[in-house]
Length: 367
Image (cartoon, rainbow, N blue to C red; front, side, top):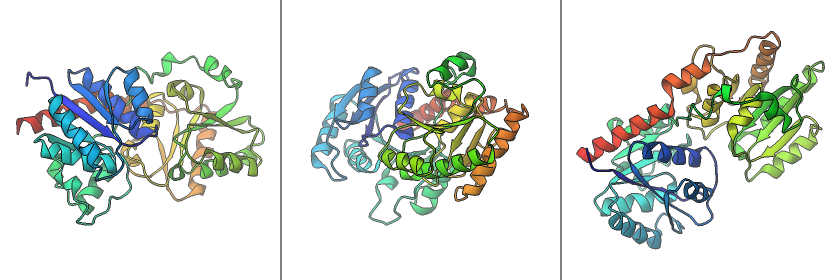
């Protein structure tokens, strides 16, 4: 197909987490293979700022609800005016108005589902069934939508987010310099979490784990870093103080260059109990050859391979603690896994993600 494909992405969320990062990375990657990308989002959204930094055309719309007629008619105008071929929606509100706008204008409608939370199976919630294709970011999400949301297996694909191996390259990070920024010694064992600070990420468990690990290893110099921002950061700060961990846990806020954060830590931990697709932060850590302890929330198990990641029960604080303690013991005995980067490169690279999505685009437009 010689004609350049034009794709309009829609996103009503104003946050900045794995979902929004996936959208932007996907747009960047597809631009490299000659797809023309547009974004419709809200005025105060973080993705608007990042998309404009990357020189994408951005349309500001209200996205006030699933039947927002103002947004709907503006989307119809944009689709016709810019001769959009495919509308790719990402969240609940924009999926209804964006999907219906695509259908009414005769364009192809793709729905991407990022989270693992079950979507209502009520028959009135039929918008996902209208999509010409559904993309999920993990296999468990795909299976759930086939089972509960009446999506035909041939119309839904699992395509995990592919981090850029050139950005997340352990050889490109000067470890001592990265640690100096946070006044961390070379000998300190650093355990970190990188996640939006929301309930389902369970930072409370990370903090409880830290208390046990500190008490169990008085002979070791251990520090914990919490990277990210979010709506419950005040609660997290109070929890740290209540467990008397002010000197052991440092909240460093949002970071623009996660590769530097991953380059300075020794162990990456993700404590989510739900809501995950295939977590980008884990894949990024694996590309950096950082040992990972993660709960089996969502499609995290898609990243399981021999000696590349320690996956524990998503409902067990005790298993999280054991996983971290075992990893500390391996570090102390100089047993560090080096296979994880190879695994991600072969199975979850940015190039693989782009190739799979482009194939879906072409197949839809040839139908």
